[in-house]
Length: 130
Image 1 (cartoon, helix red, strand yellow):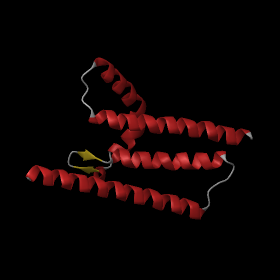
Image 2 (cartoon, rainbow, N blue to C red):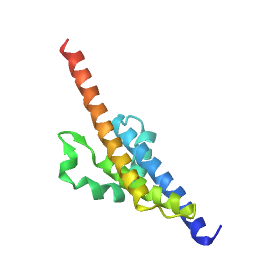
Image 3 (tube, one colour):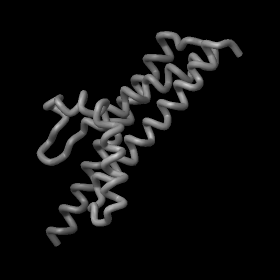
């Protein structure tokens, strides 16, 4: 294994850790911050992830009322770079067909997520009506 592949493997591992930090941040944003330990953890994770996530918060069409879908786009872009670094660490650059397949897979995943979210909201709304 040459130096470039090793560098890509280390970069891929760091991107994966950052991806999980953003996921933890998203989950913690749903929970109330009652204890001081949770508040400190949340502040530390916010400080680490804010520089990246602030780039996507300014996009107005990602906000629907109180829902903010900027983390979805942020995670999609991060996962694209994660995919590239993993492929480069294996010693091959993905071709145009593979990149197109990856983009289509991501778009389909986002659409499926939005449809699932819409179905859950509709079910909750139906339950609260009756």
